[in-house]
Image (cartoon, rainbow, N blue to C red; front, side, top):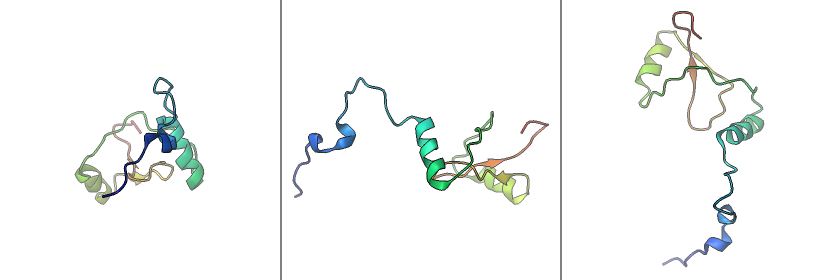
Length: 87
């Protein structure tokens, strides 16, 4: 059995719970952009979360979307398309 870990030894937990989080979406995106040397481009005004990838995979296979190379996320990709004049 492993020894118990004290929360006092974990730097992540050594802050006031009332203080705002340092892990904001903006800061996380900024850190990934810096690490990957990505351009700071705005997130599109309309995004669709495709849980299983069926929609985005199908649109990509049809050549209707393109990869957003500046998307600053380690675990997901973003694809973009124009529909009825909205990009």
